[in-house]
Image (cartoon, rainbow, N blue to C red; front, side, top):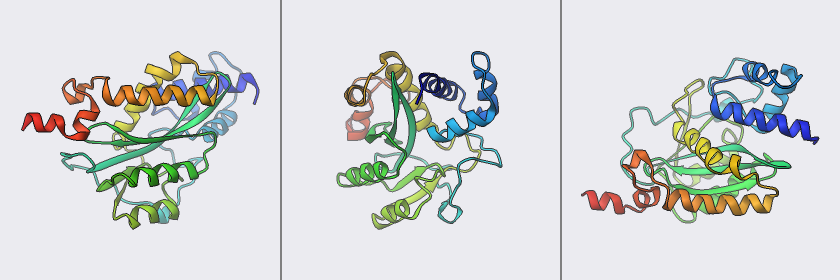
Length: 242
């Protein structure tokens, strides 16, 4: 992949991170401030990056498997304990030369990163590997995801159902259904990815490993009254408040 294409993909990532409701048309308009580029190319690159707007349009480039789509279970649900709800999602991660994909599992009560996995491709194997590893330690009552192809397929559905996990999926066009995960992706990119300019997959893995520890155990979280996610996930903060 040539350097200009990688630069354009990185710009797409920044625009999408700042404006997750922008579709390929608006992203093309922003890119044209610097590049000569057409909408068809932007749409293709966004598909390769696994990026779609939060407000999908009728002619989505990503095909959903309708028979595996599940209803959204979290509306008006009071999330009051760890492992009640986990959220999962995938995002594009840039390097100086190249890119990878980051899959994360977030506990919605504590905002703690339960597990994560990096991959050089969007093949579903890395998602399944991470989920199975996490389930070996603990399991959520409900798992929430978007309607992407990694989650609307029989392998994913069967894994969760075999572990007695209820499956929830964001509604199409519902910007707030997966807001915790979207906020985390924005945080890690601006706190770490964009400023460190990792050179290689090895550097990226080392950097992300360090960031996840920092995020879970050191970085204060406003929604946790200035405490850190790990304290809430382990229950120490709740115990102190009781």
